Image (cartoon, rainbow, N blue to C red):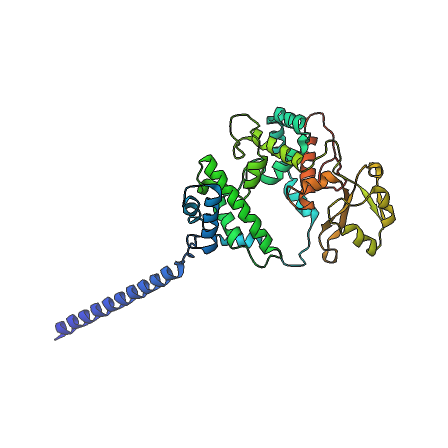
Length: 382
């Protein structure tokens, strides 16, 4: 009897242990499944323009106007993907966001970019000199633009240009105050990209650039690639992706086409003692030169040094330095010339223009035999 009880006890204990082990295993399996489910991320569906009515109409009209084989533009545009990231990037910042010139400038006028710019200038000194001689555009300006745009070719953009331009053409954010005008502009650039691809034999899906569709070392939009690009190394083709010479010549050509005046400074210093009403008058034209130098003192803006003898119109340019009520500094001001305005035709921003000027000047100051003021101080003049 004792033996049978012992055997019965052992069997019961074995069954109990097996049950516990099975229960633990089941719990672990359920826990693993929960973990697996928690880690599963459902990818957002990729939207293309294969069935977008506006895109299909655009493609058909372009094929007819260009005389291309039917279906060519539609074939490529059907492969374009809508990019939500592009929509986010072009959506305006919330109203009231304070601009800060010092912070903006320090993004571009910093040791890495200055060193890269110095190497770029030294490696392409003869080409820069040739461009200056042909187009009348100073080397410092060309170097400043390419440096701000792409860090001398290190950051040319990884967006598929076809995707970016299709998104901006047919899904431009309606929150933008000029949504209709901007969408129409990007349609012209999409057309220019497709023409560029058709003429070059490079597939539209192969082009890469910024989220706004700009490409190459100088970040030319497709229409400017065709209109203002220059085969400056004379190898039979315009290559703004890999040829520093073509990029240099094209930037110089762009500046001349928009009215660069050789020898004219970009801006002057100014002493301000203007009332609020006078400031409103001075800032009303924005950065478009609109005032004769002799008229500025009557509005509380006195030109300093050579500005008083400047032959031509001037603009009062304001650069915010953060929100003064939140620890920011008062705004900086300069008198911008026609050449300052021309730089803003490359990028419609006075902050951009001043950053290009400052970087170009700072890089030039690193060259042997050059002694120029450098850094983000607004007193830099060229």
